[in-house]
Amino acid sequence: MSRYDFFNLQAAGASAYNTPLMKSLLPDQWVSFLSSRLKSQISIENAERAQTWAMALVGMTALGLALKGIAELSGLPPIFAVKVQFVALFHAVMIFGFYLPAFLQKGEKIQARLLGVRDKTSLTLIGLTLSFYALVMFMVSQQAAAQAGELKISGYFAFIAAANFGVSVFYLGLCVFLAFGFLFVPALLIKAADKTGKLPHVLFSVHAALFFLTGAAYGEVAPIGSPRFFEHFLIAAEFWIFILASVFFIARLLGESQVPPLATLEFEVTAGKLERHEDILARFRDVLIRRRLSFWINRLSHMVAARAHEIAGYTHEAVKYVDRDKPTEIDLVQVEGRYKKADSLQRSFEREGQRFQLCLTFFDFNEAERERIEKLRDQFSRELRNTKLELASVRKRLDDKLVAIKNSQVTLLASEIPPAKPAELPLSN
Image (cartoon, rainbow, N blue to C red; front, side):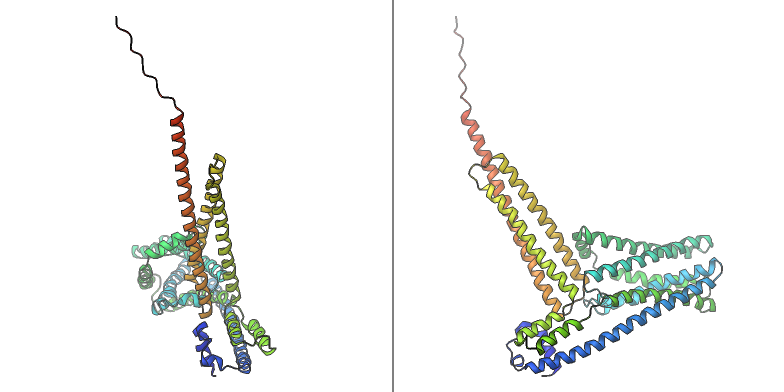
């Protein structure tokens, strides 16, 4: 069996277990396949590790050269020109490094793949890194806008500087909004994402326009194509090389090695601990799932089951008090307390489900991980639906019981009130 056939079989999932191709696979072939896969994985990870540290070296070298170039500049106008070039290159980076790849590979999550966003840990660290550089961009554009007024440059340049400052404010505010929404109100992010479908196209157009307009405005500081232009461009480009290298270094540094689980699987198959094809293939698919992501999936799965069980416990206690023949006021208070607690847990449960949906939009999954994620998504949806129906049923029974108690009390009071005596008329003379 060729390696190409094996990967077709692995991609087919559990439905491929009973195929003739699967039954023809011998244990010795599994051992040889796992050995070759382990060797290739070691070579790949060694090459990626070398690229990561080479990238770090290039970034640190670029930062040193940029700082040296800044130190050699004298006076405010040259430093101001470097800041203008830095802002112009920001638009180029956003166009060719973020928006254009997303448009060319729509639905492929190319940004998540480039940045290595595969689990919650990588999402947090990459988000903090991008937020820090958004703050740097905000400070540089703010200084450029302020220094444009000090140097008494034309109104056109001041307008472009103000527009660049507005874009930096937008991205910094977007980082704060995403962090706040993800932590506290994930439903707000979901609604915002549904209503801003054309926002990437608008931002792409804004970056493209400001890239050319900022470049044209730079001509007031130094002629485009002159030696000073290339000197300022080189310093600004070196800063951006350091920024991109640091982001990709963090993304690569968060990658997980698949060598240990592959080696463990190869040892178990060689030692005869795993002999059935279904067991070996299932274990191989588990190896393809990254460890941090697997831990996150398992933790969420246990949380979903525990939260649904906790909500069911409170609703069952509420039903127990409601179903009594003559519940006292203390029983009714207990019922309301149990229901409010279950309702609070349900709201928290819904926020967890919304946060889970947001994570799925940011993470990059392979085929095996996507299969596990789909199972967890179904579990979330099923438990949320069941707890909602259970809470609605308890609320209805509680309201019906309260109405029945109220009607019985009104009838009892009406029976206890004595009928009014007729008034006696005075005798006439």
